[in-house]
Image (tube, rainbow, N blue to C red; front, top):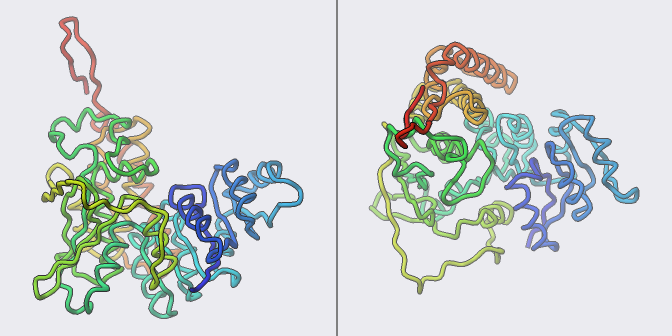
Length: 408
């Protein structure tokens, strides 16, 4: 039974806290070398006291004093800050495993450099592959790194592919819950509020990924991620809506057999799988009770109602920096929606217009990926500013008759 020493990027987020719970349940197998967090200093302080890492990294140097004040004098690890420190602990020889769970393109460089050091990487930061998949996967292959996906769908696909040879697999099927607007008419999406969109029916996640799930953009990102992870042609990666979220992924083999990965909706299972693969061990998650009656549904996604899913496939067909542009524009548009600056359908319009305006490149380095990312963000902001009236969220108001009137 192998033991592992971890660096956790995003330790105070959902994946980070679940990873630490897996460590908590398996003290004899896992220990923590470094914790990397953003602005949740209070939670980071509690994690440091429980797991005693050698190093802790915060976003800004000003947060170091805040963190130090929350720790007992006898339990303060080395405290660092900023992107360079994030990379430093990701490649440090003291840790053999990186849990990459920072949201956004911020996790790309650390993930890439860890791959170049041949480490095992539990990948929960899909933007690393969406924005820089070609670079990351080249580094993984060249340096013998182990990249194990943590997203439930890709982790499920990884498990399904153990059932046969890769050349025998003909199709990868990723499931989607359908989000909170699965049955909402397309025309009603004009009046969706951030609170509506954040009410995910299955998963409890961060704000951006929850909005991306509501638009099906998150599933589009997963299609791109699956392309890089498993080397399927985009036409052979299918998305199906499965509201019960029990089947996470399926792989069809050339003889017609379909292997499905099924488990409770608990992220600790794929996290532990990424840490212990190829072994399996008892995980602190509920088991499925097969004596209970259940109904599982599968439906085709509505590409007309959720155009961002189609744009993700199109970015794969275009290649180069297209998926990087897609991700950057989406992050800007989602932020504007959450702040009340644009309506829900305008998220897709911002992304589509940004893709139309940006030239395609083939980034040869992380720096070039980040440059394309920053340019796309600037273009997306310009598009939002130029279309403030057209993209503004609809307002619903009560009339004297008790009916509702819609004002753009």
